Length: 424
Image 1: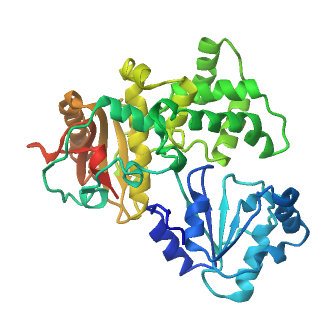
Image 2: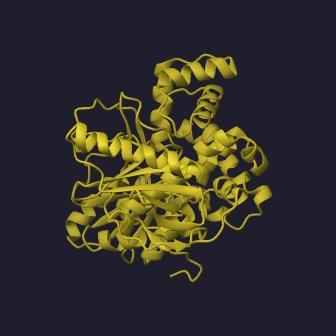
């Protein structure tokens, strides 16, 4: 156990899964804390990506995968995707031992299926880890539980003032564990280096197909300009043509987006439709997000002053920050994050579906001056679904706001909660 380890919300899930499955695979972006968290739960380890001894661990794993599996359990196999046959070796060993809690595998990319013969279903459980939420990094007081909020259970409280500068800093810094104590003037360097590593190295290692670094960079910049929107691949192509005066084929865009997903660089917000059970036609576009809004900041070269000077962009990045945290919090109690958009041009920024099929509707606003309009939108959509379309209405209506100093329930029944007061 490391005395310096900072608890993560995924810890309880890791413990639970180790008590049920023979192995747990923790996947997610680089630098989000996978190795530290895995070490916290393991009694021995092997780091496949370690450069020591001219990458002797990797060579050993390639020559004799079973030899690297020996050690006190749970045993950590870090960056297993560097040697894909390790997956089948772990599955085989789990079958042979027939005991839960044998291994934790970590991976910062999804490898090609080549070299993997079995899915590992029933033996190896997959968990996705993300950068830290504001509660995990210590920037949210956590006095309001999202789980309790989704049951309509909150107590009105004053939560303290939050400045625009602070919210901008949370976005620029991101949820990277190694970036939490860096002076804010330098906090953009880690996300910038992350993007550079993706462009210069990671995208080229994920498969054998040729890549164009310039077009990868242009696509990433376009995604940053379109953070928290539902733009199509065709719109991304037009955006690149209009702003950067470069052309890129939509098939190339689709190919690069698939790579970004496999590297856990992006994580889009899927549309919510089926459980509303309404006759209104619902758009099936995904809302685009980087895994952390700090990456969009880095690509757009934004600092605190520039962000405050462009409140429109700030609003989209704040929405990305909120939805990152909502996803992390909701998954701890079985909730799933979606968004809603129909052909009547009505939208809900976020939807959380609970395990019993009920759902809660959220609007996300940076300023308190936007709360009234957001509440009207929530009520309008709820009434339409319930009364006009005979669908299943949301059980809770809530506005997540950046610049508000209290948790409360409005007279119209809509909750208002500051992001900096939330936890799971």
